[in-house]
Length: 178
Image (cartoon, rainbow, N blue to C red):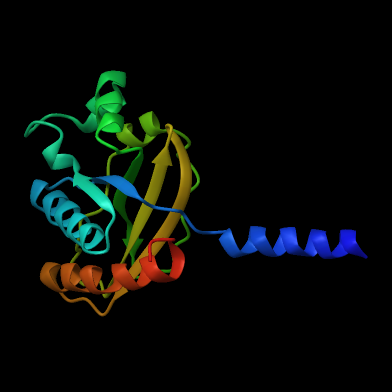
């Protein structure tokens, strides 16, 4: 009987943490073609993270303007970020529009994620929703993926406004941050 209770306890412990990421710090990487889209997403997420006590830095503050984000793969830059207290990399991109999407499982390491280019814009005309994909990396390996769907959008500004409103709620519900 004691073994059964112990097994039940372990399963309960496992499933209460399933589908969550423990987040203390993050380098925010927006994967968008337009620099202004990349900037607004990175700045918004950094602002939200710092408001709730998560140490965050946007990629824009690490690399030089116009430089490829592929430099993050270099060991020297990763070691410098570790010294500053950053061990998690958060990639944000648009997964698609007007449908229900699930997180992709095609990326397996940090280098593949850096090579990936976004084919979607922050907002597309005649779209009523956009799905953002979040991929977390630690030690060059994916540790968590999530999708945030922003509905009832009509332009780029409303997309950003919905994103800023929905992200903290999603973080509280799915990610271990509060």
